[in-house]
Amino acid sequence: MPLDASPMDVLRTSVSELALFEPEESKPGASSIGGAQRLTAAFPTILGEFHRRRAGLPPPGERPELSHAAYLLYALLDREPNELDARAMDVALILHADHELNASTFAARVTASTLSDLYSAVTSAVGTLKGPLHGGANERVMELVEQIGTPDAAETVVKAKLARHERVMGFGHRVYKVEDPRATILREWSRKVGAARGNLGYFEILREVEQIVHREKGLYPNVDLYSGSIYSLLGVPHDLFTPIFAASRVAGWTAHVLEEYQDLRLIRPTAKYVGATDLTYLPLEARTG
Ligand code: COA
Image: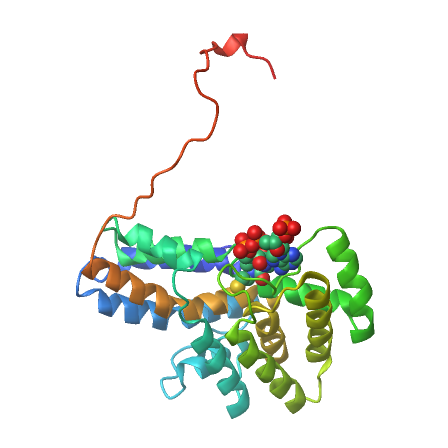
């Protein structure tokens, strides 16, 4: 794959490609638990292989003595994380693993509901997670934090953004109209990981942003507000934030897909047409505009 490709594109294509090598695992049915485990295990390896290659590093190889979270960091960063960093990643992976019928999980279930295979369902999910209104928000949060630079600059930058009717990523949620409980936990981990490094800069800027957005728009933080600051402190490049989300959510996606297979019903919503009716057909050459 091209070394300048987006890691999310690499991940989506790799999941799809894996099905070619694991045709039995990818079939819908009870045996899919093997495919689910293998896919969950494969995500850190796929990401580590790609990221190390583009960074000119050797492939990560196997490290079975490391936990899943520690291996993910090791595979990406080429160094073993300390206990605090590994635990921070573990907490982030746990918090992102499943969240009801979010857009990517729904996409996975729609695909599985046609009796398509597990790998196709997860490929749909990765593609759906890629969008900034779903998985890509924490990357944008950190772009904003870097643009702000210091806590006292937050007010001007955020207010100008809101005045342009732009969304501030990391706020608002389709389901939560209060603070996302995952944000409460990640806020504390952002502080802890920052304090351990003597660098509370990101944390302090985000606290400011939080207060301004709440005051101006009445919006509360979601899971994406603090996660990016933790990954940045751990040394993970921005374009791997959404892939890390995927490396967590794959556990939830595959669990949902297996559940879908057990109680299968084709997901096929109906649409209500609200456009004009009784129109006269116009041949193409008679149409203007
Ligand atoms: N920044 C600024 N305004 C926001 C906002 C945000 N992050 N989230 C919602 N709003 C505003 C909308 O502009 C809208 O205002 P309006 O009624 O004046 O047009 C109102 O709140 C309702 O927004 P809507 O998009 O209809 O709500 P939703 O339930 O569909 O939105 C999200 C859910 C997550 C798509 C939305 O909050 C958002 O875009 N958040 C930023 C992206 C993000 O952090 N995603 C990660 C989600 S975990």
